[in-house]
Length: 72
Image 1 (cartoon, rainbow, N blue to C red):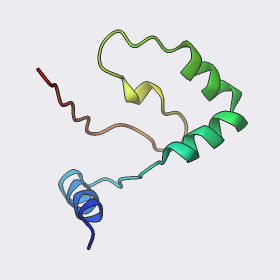
Image 2: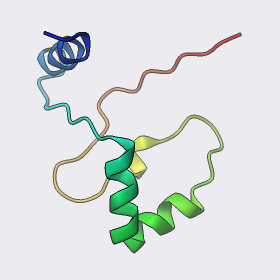
Image 3: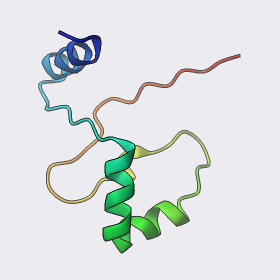
Image 4: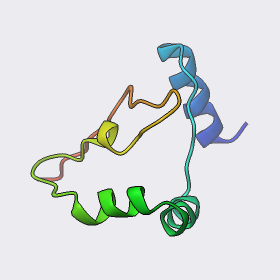
């Protein structure tokens, strides 16, 4: 099993939730189709860390874990 798959499986087991991996090319394709999403991306002002939960809408989508690495 690849390292990425192991990490995803661990996150799913720890959280009890499904982990969905979304690639940049998929996001770009959705931005071309979804004007509401494009507007959100264009107008989002990052004042602090990205609030990923604001980017998800519809269905059962939510950010359950955000990992931040700070380099000093």
